Structure formats: structure tokens, C-alpha cells
Image (cartoon, rainbow, N blue to C red; front, side, top):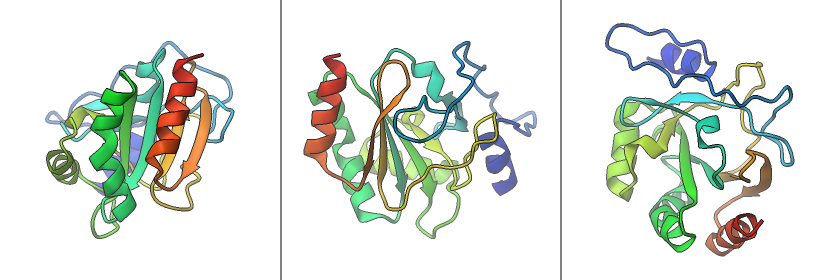
Length: 182
């Protein structure tokens, strides 16, 4: 299972007949991408907690909050509790959680994602199952987080406009409103 998750994150999935198919590659593509502020985000095709796949580029045209979290992290749990109210308050922002670690610090599996979604009332297709070694198809590795949670807030052109370490609801709401008004 760990090998499959790592390979899915590398966009080179190993699939058996019971595995869901990954999302088709988006027609949107930039020659250069990264997980750094100011750059276009690299596309990731990752398994979701509902057993499917999602990729970041399929949300082109939307303001997106990418919440990189660990299940054991208290501030990450606080962010999860607030994600639905932020989506409602901000009028339709897309909130995607990328779970990096389960309660024991291991790569999360579908059951972990389902548990997270059920507990915090988050749709399972909004929870992506990643690892600390996420890679885009160009081989760029990982999110540069040094603390939990870690947020990337993307404009409608999938450019990383805000990088925020730690949980601050008011700041996230302010950033979302700024991007929506552009």
C-alpha cells in the first residue's frame, strides 16, 4: 500500500483491477512549477478518501486553499473543524486537504481519510492522501512545510499567492477575500 501511494503521488500509478483510475491529465500545464509562493503549483494526482483520485489542475478557475495537514496535529484538527464554515463564509472557495501523516506519523490510507472526513464533516473527495514525498510529473519533490498545518492559497490561475505556516482563521479569510476580489 505504501509503495502504491508513493507511486500515485509520482503520477506513475500501479493499478490493479480493483483500483480506481487516476484523473486524466489536465490540458493546463506550465513548463515551470513549484510549491513556492509566486509560482504555479505543480499538479498532483492523488488518491482521495472516497477511493477516487483528484488533481489540483482540475480546479483551474477557482480560488483554492490547499491545507497540508497531519492527523495527529491539534492545529490541523482546528483547521479541519473550520474548513466548512470558511467555504460557506467565503462564498465558494475550494478547500482541499492533503493529509500527509496518520495518527502514528505514517502515510495515511483511505481508512484514515474516511475517519478524518467523518469526524470533521468533510466530503471524502476533498481529502487527498499524500506523503512528505509528493512529486509532480516533472520530479519536483514535496511541500516545503516546516510546521503543521501548512497552507497554500492559490489564485484562479493556480498560482501560489499565499504560503502560510500555522493556523489563523482570520488571516486565511482575509487572503481568500483579497483573491476573490481580483
